[in-house]
Image (cartoon, rainbow, N blue to C red; front, side, top):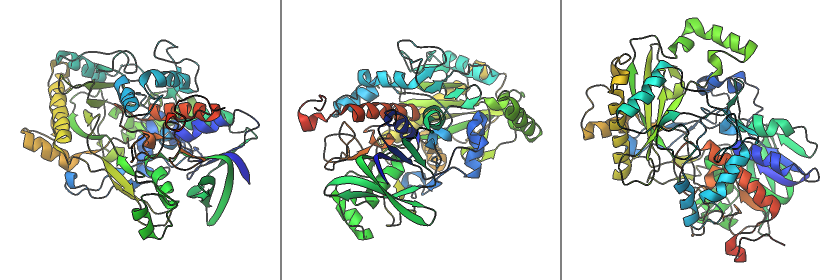
Length: 541
């Protein structure tokens, strides 16, 4: 069967593309998703995301290679394997980053990706509950709301930040990111607003859009230098569908480079030993992997004011039952109300540490709830120096690739994470927390010196789930796609997802991924060609 466009990956970017490219009824679009439909109620109940981690029902279940900088530990890397991708399983935090992130992309040779270029696409995507303004969109598909700061521990968090001498910001996606303030999140009317819900569900019955689930792309079919189709596995069967115009890879920072490598597109000397015939030598495929890594400080709380009131066994069933009947109540909230973005040194261009504050205690990615009242803060560096890679372990398309982030193997990253720890501990020591401060049980009083902090981070740091960069956009020899997201040296093939980011942005990565897909859809539909090809980023005739 033939289509105009085949989108390999029904995650955040893939759902956007499926919506935008199928808007013309004469254009036939196929969307392939390795996972299933987003029917699990835990996906749509905002407080349910920790339960998704525990079940693994909609998760790829990746693990990294042993990390030398983390005492040889292998980290769990959850990624969404379901329509909507990680937008269906994440913590729903809506953060764009800072203007300098995107201006840096443009300075690296990516014309059309500076802040002034991408802000219109953030706004085009957004349907902000507070209405449209200079920074926010009010008519887009993606529903964004602000739950407000109501929990006493979150109130204390923001007040403690002020007491420690840090600024307050009322909008992390507005004029200034720096400071303490309330979050924006992709929640609407008590339900998760994933890319599948906001972009795909309203158009899934279009006759020119075919959504194929439980269909894992295994190979891009390339003929005479042009991508012409996708082979995919569905159950025990393998099928191939053909694309008249383009194949668009939207599998994310792990799956997209893996699919290219399995298709013979990548470093020839790494592909050939697996028995895969090199089709197109492209040395940057799988390289440039970047991720946010975080540590945590956790306190017990002597007052019964945390979200443990919601998740303790005696209350949880009641709250979930009420939610299922009404889409209201404690289970309808994300559980995160406030964040902070701070500079560890005055000379940095923008905040280099992000803090997630949670009025609850859990461990192991939410797979273990700590059955006491308490609170915790996560500190993660925004712009790490570490660069890693995704490489094949075998030619088996169903086998996970090797994930090598190279965490904490340079002094700059160690220092930033160490400084983030110190600043968080200082905030927790402020008077605003006096009524609520119980024992700091992680890491505790035994961690004080720089060496002890570094050791603690090496023993306990984890991903904050923001991998990017493995099919990076650029003009250098290690770039995989050009500024129009076309795979360099091949026709009819693009990559559109977080893997094209040349540098990690300063914040959560889902909103930027959706922006990338919105801009990519415009590029594809308007026929923009790369300036490196045409000498000018003009419209193709």
